[in-house]
Amino acid sequence: MRRLSRILAVAALLAQSFAATAHEGSTSYLLVDRTREAFTARFDVALIDVAWALPLDADGDERLTWNEVWAERDRLAAFLGGAIRVSRGGEPCDARVEAPWLTNRLGLPYLSVDIKLACTREGPVGLASDLFFDADASHRMLVSLRSGNAVQVATLSPSNRAWLQPAARSGWATAFDFVAQGMWHVWIGYDHLLFLLLLLLPAVMAQTARGRERGRAIAFDLVRVVTAFTVAHSITLALAATGTVSLPQAPIEAAIALSIVIAACLNLAPAWARLRLPLAFGFGLVHGFGFANALAGLGTAGTTWPALAGFNVGVELANLAVIALLLPVLLRAAQHRWYAPRALPALSLASAAIGAAWFLDRL
Image 1: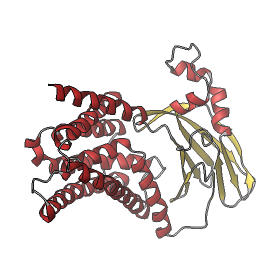
Image 2 (image 1 turned 135 degrees about the horizontal axis):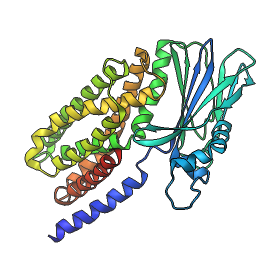
Image 3 (image 1 turned 60 degrees about the vertical axis):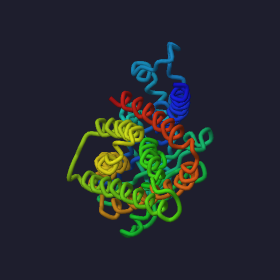
Image 4 (image 1 turned 45 degrees about the vertical axis):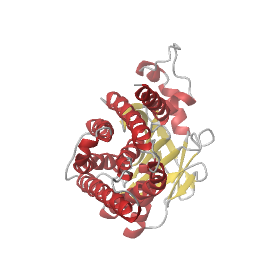
């Protein structure tokens, strides 16, 4: 009983620690659309980030309402419009910022503004911003420029605050751009990373005693589970990103959170270990829809195959990087007597608590 109490206490502390950082508030999105008829942009910033930068809670009750946000609409439009600089042919473009409106990205409220741009010169488009970069070194602005059927992407960061549209890109160059975006969306996808950790935790507990046989058993179990997960989310990513299958974002994000709870519960029941493979494949399908929503968020609905291929390769490279970082640590930990009775249950319970909190929040 005392051991169970200690495990629950550790789980609660871990859940509190992870939940405090598990949000997408360090990412903003700038989507620019250039056609013959119009030159427009849409700028999405997490509402929690805006609230940190501007005092919006008028009555001081620590609860932000839409009425309070709407009352500051002119100031918000000026703040968000002034946070980005758009140029064309080396000359700044005039920007008319519309009233802000509320949207949702990955289960979090985002404040959005539509911007109408007027440029006096032709030429390559330039984008620049200093928004949040001085206060938050982890902030990233994901930029997407659509010109007809072509899409070009970039990431602005504290060390790279400006981007100039390059010359016409080949399919290989487009794919390479989206590799970086795929990797970034894994690194900021805390729910995906947590699910991947839950797949790894029991994989290092091969029953074979020691030596090469143990290593082979661990490798075989890990390869088949990760392969099932990879194949599944690659299938649904392709289907959703190309418009073949379309599902709303909210239930997908809730299902991803639920997958964490179920995977954590399976880790606590060794008798259910045989279900890990179908679980990895089944919820891999769900995670693929989540990645497709992230890809669509870059303004790539109906995306070209090079963009889709590059994004998927980036996701897989990031997955492999996570496994390469975690596996040696877990293999070393699994050699200790405390891993199976203490560490594994504590980490799984903490993950279940986090997943349940995300699930309820996303409902």
